[in-house]
Image 1 (cartoon, rainbow over the protein chains, first blue to last red):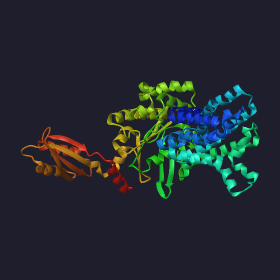
Image 2: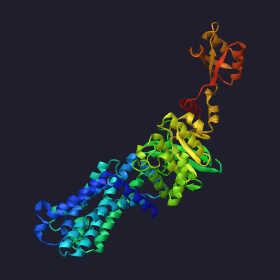
Image 3: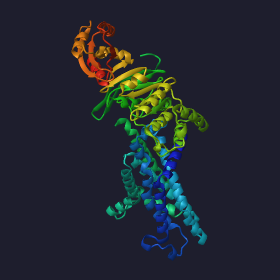
Length: 243
Length: 320
């Protein structure tokens, strides 16, 4: 596992060396902050609601993450392919899986920093009222899990191309698809979608976390999506052998 | 095919789609030798190196490094190798020291060991003064040194360098060649090049690859012996009032063993000189010299015509 940590450390340093991390981080904080306090079009005004809750944060943050996280992952492999550094990286005595995990872990480092910076919001709510602490913890666990799944999807998209913009757009479309489209599509075709199909939807899996329920099934769901994306990324790196 | 072969390459075939990049390449690299892979662009040198370094898999055939099959245990093979790919890809946003430290750690060296080793390697490749610089700001020559440094950091048994001097200016080329030559004393080294002079200067042995196949394998002297133009000479004689180019030509043509003599050109500086191409089946240099001296002429130049790569390929591909 050691190469994974060494790689993750470099990836995180590289992320914070580039302006993208700061743009994405600032965008995340501003967008979640605005949505938290004012909701969409003022429908969810925090101050008018007179309720000490962090729920809006967990409602809106995944939307923002689905857009900014692919911007963080887009360079991970695409840039190495374009610059040719991938050839040196994959001929180091490490496995392709270790490379993918290291890159994912480095990106998770960014996610943790970004989420940590939003802790000021629950801090504020805790200072002025008595919110459900369980819901806050559950929500953050959920954001970490859904964020990790988004990162893995973005990383997978980055292994498919040399072009960062393509990686970003494909990654964002994948994230958006899993976050929104499955629910919307299901409702489009079925009045009452069978509960099994909700397995496809990040939203249905995420709701419990925001209520403070950490259900092992939901945890496993996000970990499974992440694992599948990691396997697909590894496969994509390996595909150089038979092209 | 000796037992001391550090690297054994057997019948490598690589197809990209329906295009054959390699059609059965076989050669050995012995421990401690500098082997040059020579060939024109697109001959299959880089593909061979990518398979040697386990970046790519061969469609068929095998690579054995120090007794280990690269397809079966690629990680063990990678641990023995240092690799400098063509055009030296590096993380341009990293500081030289941090990058090399990272490479060392990725190769499983302990941090303290890397630091010590880095100091040694930096001295060998001449990077001491740029260790704190961002790689992207370095000149091409220094980037090449960083690439060499990462390849030799873990003191690998084998160094594989893909066109290590391409894109460098003449001074940098000389420096990097000297560096490689000195590295060859402690490592088995395979380098690729399309520059014959470079291979002559650096390599103990050459494998010539042409259209995805090995057309020759041996020392450069051996190979040149097989090439017909070995006895192709260039002769420069000082012209005088009584000896113009035509008379000189007939004089040379009368040398025993001379097959053909062609007037090449005259040059006025520093002294008026006429140049001729002389071809023969055997080495007639001493006979030529005697003939010129006997005619009381001044021989200013007598050299074997240097081989160009195209000439070698033509001769070799025709004779194979």
